[in-house]
Image (spheres, rainbow, N blue to C red):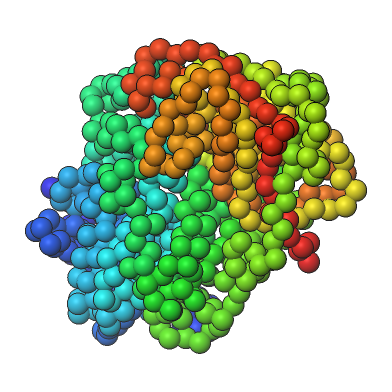
Length: 591
């Protein structure tokens, strides 16, 4: 195809600048455009190569993207890397922009990543050492490539990235991430180039084409016709493969940690849509990495962010310390693994996390943190925990004689998304948000602790254990952990969703028997927060979070197939061996 930047090379002359001693700047670099790497099946993928102008062989950093090598914001970091003695290679992935082949998200990244790394290692400007970096999809491609153990790969730096496309991208707890999947998969990424997403939210958009209308469409399986006016095959495949079957396992990085032999530095945010991938990438490599070096030297950083570092997110300003210059971290990482600089990064504590509430960073020796006390906090009420005005309580003692709670979930009137783990131009606002508007609803159960007199620090995995029943064959359980401030603000800090048919595992679908009580474990991923004196701990339980997740129609039909919905009467039990609770990872106070 025609390339708008076919000039084979040009030079950039840059003013001298001050850099860390371990990363001296080369003032002159060159950029080689439209460099073809031939994959094993003959398909050519094209890259721009930023490199020092001086002759020589240099370590290589590979960035692979479906968003175009000309995307705004990428050139600065690539230039800075080349200034500091690296070759920075940015490549369009298969079927995107100038690269040949068919675009099919996720399916070819392992093989193409391997082949690109090995191609880069043999180029005349390469010394044979290759690392990778990038975030989101640019992080996923690193995990995929590392799973093929390319001989010349020495380290990866995946940020805000999924490690299991089914479990921590397309779905969570088996529930379909509707707003993100539709916005990313149908609106922006259906073909070769990225399309603008603002069309579906702008004031000039016809009412029938706005997100708030399109995402209500049933059945989901042909919802792409409302926007693209044709069937988007990968989106339809995602809906058809509703469980963690071989379609998903074949591209799951979490199935292949044992084949990854290089250290991985993961980074992400507590409110990022892919925070489970950030955590699972670290824990997976530490436990199952394919070499002692990979197991020992993999690292993790998690801040109070969404899909990238920030100081203020949602309704909360986390303070100036919340911001981290990830480029400086990347430089230290690459200097050590690509240049052999003994800067101590391999000897630092492996985990660095930000404690919200206290607004402090702390280094930890592992995740979960050694010595964590996983402590149950039990739900109780007099039978009316519905809404903020109800009588739901939360405490460390098992309730005795507490009544059950009931609510009606109507998919036609779902609980709206308000903050949480979302990202990337979807029609919902992500992050920590005051939950009181949704806690006013009768279909939200609200369980609140007494006012704390001492600070309580938690950091680690969070899970909710629900003993519950429904009058249908399937339904959803949505649980939020909330920090209630003295002024009444109710700020979400963790959340989880479970589609009831997946209660025995994401690869084991089994519909319910109406009216029967079951035990459900809702994975709320993890967080780090200090509940301060004067605050209260709260848990919200409901059955929808729309449009972040699709609405369960309560019919038991296959995902995306139903064009009808039914109401469901939900019961949450509290006593007689069915004590519903949340399990909090209590740790020592950060200093």
